[in-house]
Amino acid sequence: MLFGAHESVAGGLHLAFGRAAADACRAVQIFTKNANQWKEPALDDAKIVAFREAHAASGTLPIFSHTSYLINLATDKTDVLGRSRDSLVAEVERCSALGVPWCVLHPGAHLGAGDDVGLKRTAESLDEVLERTKTAKAGILIENTAGQGTCVGHRFEHIAAIFAKTKARARLGVCFDTQHVFAAGYDISTEAGYVKTFDELEKLVGLANVRAFHINDSKKPLGARVDRHEHIGEGMLGVETFRRLANDPRFAETPAMLETAPRDPEAPYKEEVALLVSLASKARSTGGKKR
Image 1 (cartoon, rainbow, N blue to C red):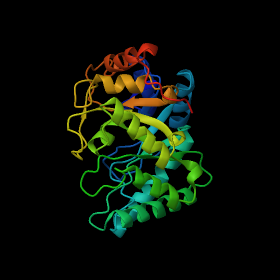
Image 2: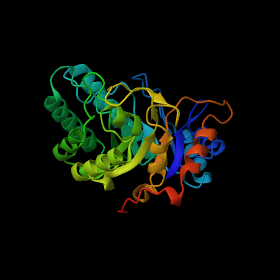
Image 3: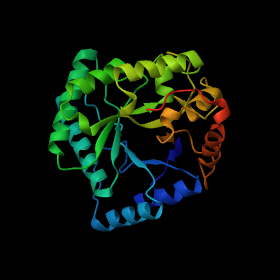
Image 4: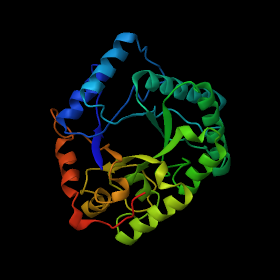
């Protein structure tokens, strides 16, 4: 796998690449704006040029953005839904200008209206956003969720339904979060559970649609439906889960980014990236079939 991390953009978006290099990342995720504010930053030509030049200097490292945490495409609140759609449009346009091919999205919460309503509203929202950005190059990755509260996306059936209901599916994909899937009740911590989970994902969504991973251990037990990340090998998933994943040939070239808490101010993810790389060993392969 192409292991990396979500890197800080403090001081400028282009600085993420130097931080990724310090952590020996082979992939990187960033926020293109403050994830906890609706405010959309101005992205002038100088910032775009600086980012693209830094990206080119990195060897065109695979890069992803994570959308704002405020976005809720499943809500029945008209004002929030409108702002959410506008914010996602702006994110897609920013990513396209920067040369970032994919935006990772939490689909949202139905707030009591029910999964079916929430999924329908999410698909309608995606159709509107993709239509409004039809000349943009960036696409959207639906991230599986932990299922906290009324959030949709914690079952593979949810993601399949979003795909089925959305018209512009060519610009959609999946970002698979290891902590979220475990919290949602898929037991990838055992070999049998790992095989069953990815067989089900292949059947319902298609592994070819998995364009990225979020690599996180879990502070919470199986089925807790709580989003709480832990450092690799220090949580409920355990190091063997990540050994299986690191050696699964189906994902050999798939970017996989850490979202754990930073440790060292100079190289916050270097130790953890190195651990993940060290787990890759042909001798411990899962024997999965390549796509």
